[in-house]
Length: 92
Image: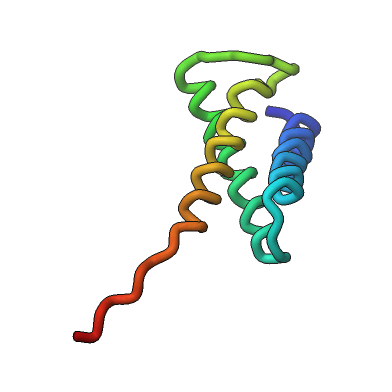
Protein backbone atom coordinates (compact mmCIF):
# COMPACT_ATOMS: atom_id res chain seq x y z
CA UNK A 1 0.00 0.00 0.00
CA UNK A 2 1.37 3.39 -0.95
CA UNK A 3 1.66 6.34 1.43
CA UNK A 4 -1.18 8.35 -0.20
CA UNK A 5 -3.54 5.37 0.02
CA UNK A 6 -2.50 4.81 3.66
CA UNK A 7 -3.25 8.45 4.48
CA UNK A 8 -6.55 8.23 2.62
CA UNK A 9 -7.44 5.08 4.60
CA UNK A 10 -6.60 6.85 7.85
CA UNK A 11 -8.75 9.82 6.84
CA UNK A 12 -11.72 7.59 6.00
CA UNK A 13 -11.33 5.60 9.24
CA UNK A 14 -11.21 8.77 11.33
CA UNK A 15 -14.26 10.08 9.47
CA UNK A 16 -16.18 6.91 10.36
CA UNK A 17 -15.21 7.30 14.01
CA UNK A 18 -16.22 10.97 14.07
CA UNK A 19 -19.56 10.26 12.40
CA UNK A 20 -20.26 7.45 14.85
CA UNK A 21 -19.48 9.83 17.72
CA UNK A 22 -21.83 12.38 16.18
CA UNK A 23 -24.62 9.78 16.15
CA UNK A 24 -24.00 8.23 19.57
CA UNK A 25 -22.71 11.22 21.50
CA UNK A 26 -20.38 11.34 24.45
CA UNK A 27 -17.45 13.32 25.71
CA UNK A 28 -13.89 13.83 24.54
CA UNK A 29 -12.60 10.45 25.73
CA UNK A 30 -15.47 8.65 24.06
CA UNK A 31 -14.53 10.44 20.81
CA UNK A 32 -10.94 9.24 21.22
CA UNK A 33 -12.19 5.71 21.84
CA UNK A 34 -14.39 5.78 18.74
CA UNK A 35 -11.53 7.07 16.60
CA UNK A 36 -9.21 4.36 17.93
CA UNK A 37 -11.81 1.62 17.44
CA UNK A 38 -12.54 2.82 13.94
CA UNK A 39 -8.88 2.78 12.89
CA UNK A 40 -8.32 -0.68 14.44
CA UNK A 41 -11.47 -2.06 12.79
CA UNK A 42 -10.53 -0.47 9.48
CA UNK A 43 -7.12 -2.17 9.56
CA UNK A 44 -8.65 -5.49 10.62
CA UNK A 45 -11.19 -5.30 7.81
CA UNK A 46 -8.41 -4.58 5.33
CA UNK A 47 -6.30 -7.53 6.45
CA UNK A 48 -9.27 -9.93 6.64
CA UNK A 49 -10.32 -8.93 3.13
CA UNK A 50 -6.74 -9.35 1.91
CA UNK A 51 -6.41 -12.72 3.64
CA UNK A 52 -9.71 -14.11 2.31
CA UNK A 53 -9.42 -12.44 -1.08
CA UNK A 54 -12.76 -10.64 -0.74
CA UNK A 55 -13.35 -7.29 -2.40
CA UNK A 56 -16.57 -5.33 -2.07
CA UNK A 57 -15.72 -1.82 -3.27
CA UNK A 58 -12.14 -1.54 -4.48
CA UNK A 59 -10.63 1.91 -4.83
CA UNK A 60 -7.05 1.55 -5.99
CA UNK A 61 -5.12 -0.63 -3.56
CA UNK A 62 -7.75 -0.04 -0.86
CA UNK A 63 -10.92 -2.10 -0.50
CA UNK A 64 -13.42 0.34 0.97
CA UNK A 65 -16.12 -2.30 1.36
CA UNK A 66 -14.31 -4.69 3.68
CA UNK A 67 -12.58 -1.91 5.56
CA UNK A 68 -15.89 -0.14 6.15
CA UNK A 69 -17.47 -3.35 7.40
CA UNK A 70 -14.53 -3.93 9.75
CA UNK A 71 -14.70 -0.39 11.07
CA UNK A 72 -18.45 -0.52 11.60
CA UNK A 73 -18.30 -3.89 13.36
CA UNK A 74 -15.50 -2.65 15.61
CA UNK A 75 -17.41 0.52 16.48
CA UNK A 76 -20.67 -1.27 17.24
CA UNK A 77 -18.99 -4.00 19.28
CA UNK A 78 -16.88 -1.52 21.23
CA UNK A 79 -19.85 0.73 21.94
CA UNK A 80 -21.93 -2.25 23.05
CA UNK A 81 -19.21 -3.48 25.40
CA UNK A 82 -18.70 0.01 26.77
CA UNK A 83 -22.35 0.45 27.69
CA UNK A 84 -22.66 -2.79 29.70
CA UNK A 85 -23.26 -1.93 33.35
CA UNK A 86 -22.14 -4.22 36.14
CA UNK A 87 -24.27 -4.85 39.19
CA UNK A 88 -22.59 -4.28 42.54
CA UNK A 89 -22.11 -7.43 44.57
CA UNK A 90 -24.19 -7.93 47.69
CA UNK A 91 -22.35 -7.35 50.98
CA UNK A 92 -24.52 -9.87 52.84
